[in-house]
Amino acid sequence: MRHFVEELEQLKTKLLEMSAIVESSIQRSISAVTQKDRTAAEEVFRTEVRINSIEIEIDEFAINLLALHQPMAADLRLIVAALKINTDLERMGDLAVSIAERATSLMEGPIITPMIDIPHIAGLVQSMVRKSLDAFVHRDADLARSVLASDDAVDSLRTACYHELTSFMEKDPHNIQQALNLMVVIRNLERIADHSTNVAEDVLFLVKGIDVRHHAETRPSAVG
Amino acid sequence: MRHFVEELEQLKTKLLEMSAIVESSIQRSISAVTQKDRTAAEEVFRTEVRINSIEIEIDEFAINLLALHQPMAADLRLIVAALKINTDLERMGDLAVSIAERATSLMEGPIITPMIDIPHIAGLVQSMVRKSLDAFVHRDADLARSVLASDDAVDSLRTACYHELTSFMEKDPHNIQQALNLMVVIRNLERIADHSTNVAEDVLFLVKGIDVRHHAETRPSAVG
Image 1 (cartoon, rainbow over the protein chains, first blue to last red):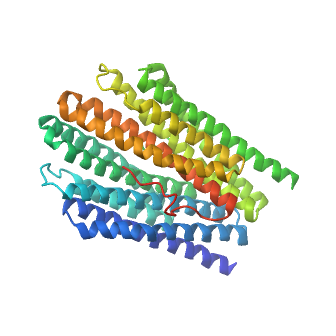
Image 2: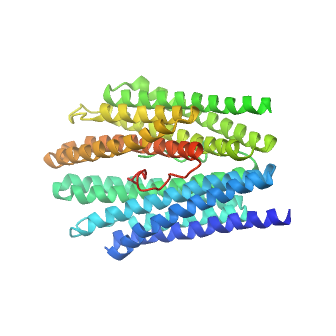
Image 3: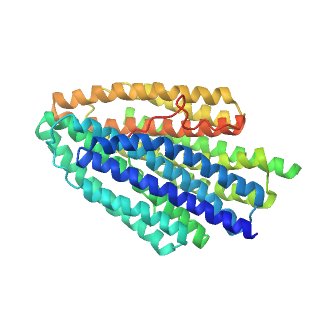
């Protein structure tokens, strides 16, 4: 049993390591956009392979824990939550790749569109990712709930950016391509925020034993 | 043991029921776009609540199977796959809601943009959803692989549509708002296709015991 407790700790550590790598990919993808940093973009592309193999490793580790220890109740839910969080982290990594791809397109032309609130949204989203994983590791319901609250702020910022970028396109058709790329960057940041929200909901389920997913208060809006 | 076998069948049946509801939401969201069918859009909004509660029900059912029967090997992997597929189906439902929301915006103006390939992409995506679930229920690796192949076709169609809609915007700024809405519809269809790909990869993992996720051959591209 001692052994099993240690292995559960190991599972959490592995998820934290995965999260650290995903977070730095997100950070680099943003630098690629805002600072036209091509090296950062390339690093994101390289890291994707690593994130993918860690995802598989964590899945296997969790499935083996289920098979070998046949855990009950709280431990079982912890492992199921870890499997779900693992999937969300890997998809955040994919979204960082997508942001880095747009950054590469944006590097080709001069920056004519103001970067508006991208660094602001990015900062908010990155703190959501961090907090949702910390909430998981420390079983901290309050921290998880603060992630759900931030999701609304991200949605408002995104809407404001969209309006700004749309009128920028309408003003001059030459801006369209660049504005579209920036819209995709913002949308991908918002999707990363949605994944953090999923993680936070899994944490609340784990800690409280209640399912907060889909309650009106917490529902992340589905956005394209 | 007899009992457990029946419960595993029940789990599959529940996922198929979930899938049928999600598929009809996708179908209705497309009708809302292409036929300006407001009733269809409203039905999608109503169905979301039901999809959310079925997701929770299936998760609970699967977790109870894990707790009560402590399955090994193949059965364990089946249940873990079911948990993952359940999440993917629920997110497809969210994307149908997002398409229906865009449909509602599109209803407000006259259709000036050609609907291009939307019905074509939608048909392809819907067949991917159907096939990926059939592949799960019948443990059919060939069918799962055909879903992975279709994902490339969806990506090509999406790229063609984006080019068409971008030049449509550039031609006349009055088209921008409508073209942006159609882009979001197409992107959401593509994301539904990505979720089907995830399901197909889980099926291959289940059937072959190998992890095809992230192999070059099958990797769905991360798109914003």
